[in-house]
View (spheres, rainbow, N blue to C red):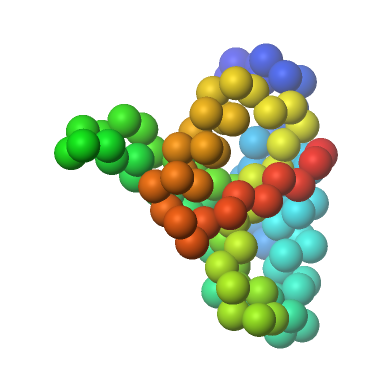
Length: 108
């Protein structure tokens, strides 16, 4: 297996899911507890957002998590140790193509 160029270590969360970093695994544990407490609902891992412009598929953005908060709003989260230029561009593209989406960055 190849080493991560940013030094992240693949880690399992308490539910047994494999995550690319310790920070993401910890966030998964935190969100799972919030869902069990019924503070959030519909927790999903790795939601995909196809980015299509003028009929051409540009890319697919894959977030870390999505869920509904107490007010019923959809929250999209991405756990980031470092926001790369490609990530920043994809974030802007997704938020432009999907007006209801606001990506929340959780710092590692």
